[in-house]
Length: 136
Image (cartoon, rainbow, N blue to C red; front, side):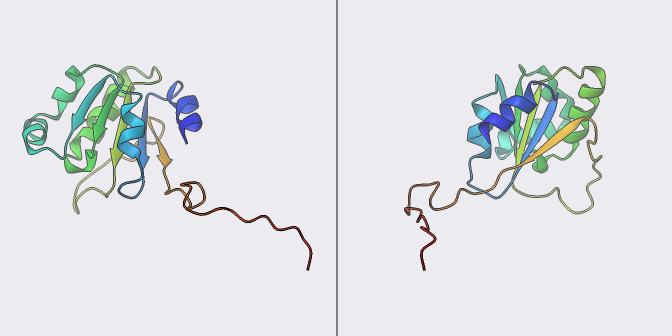
């Protein structure tokens, strides 16, 4: 995942990392971010909800964590990419979909998507993979 993300992020202005909770989306994105907006914090979320444009004042590459808590930031990022499509500007992470009734542009052509999946038990070192010799 890291290699794919690094390759894509240099070319794509904004990437959304999707996937289940606790698989490392935020940690992976934080390693590439200069600015961070954590929308799971009420103290951060409320001002952003009142004026989503304020995220654009943060340094880039900017990670917007749990973006679905203020779905309007998706459109702010999309419009920012319309103005400047240089690669490596925004990472959006989230575990859930936006709230029902939230209007969201697909981001097609502006916000790429990468799906993170949990590692297998063997990848996590919890079991040893077996190798089949092909003998009956």
